[in-house]
Figure: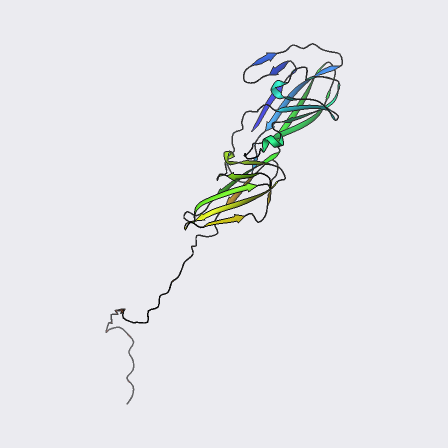
Length: 262
């Protein structure tokens, strides 16, 4: 879902409904930056599924660079008009909602990470608009199963990128999603309990590589509904039980057998 937030030089957009108007006076050699951020927080689903509603944009981290020099890094809600009043020149704005580590913390499922950047020029004495489009740059992973009822009494799965292992809930929903950076090799370990209490473990034969802005959905099913039959044959050498076979003969039916000649 795309959402847009704006930061004008003469207006500081604070959290909730708190608005503070700051008057600024022109300054020789300086221009004002009007910052607009458009963020698309949705993942592309590999199969048909209901798209989750996008959450409200949090406090993004904004970095202003001039060449290789970082001028400042601020949370969006803490920027001031002093930050956005800069000498004439060429700049780069980089925007992200979370760092890579924040989007995939150890032991937690994480969250969608969006980021974007734009190069622009500040001209002195005027307002200069910088529009930054942010898109998802990490990947969501979910698991689901269609195991036949009665085949397994329980099934548990863990996915990992080699460093961060996460036990997963079944079902392709946003709430069940785990988030990994793009280009990660994801493998899984599945433990099932058979109806007789036996536990078996299966491992991923081939890793799945995550793709930016893609929702990877891993589906499991059992190969068949066949069960294992144990055949026991007991042999008793004494023949004592009789089996009765009843047949009804109709005199009008049957095939006539010719009488042999004398």
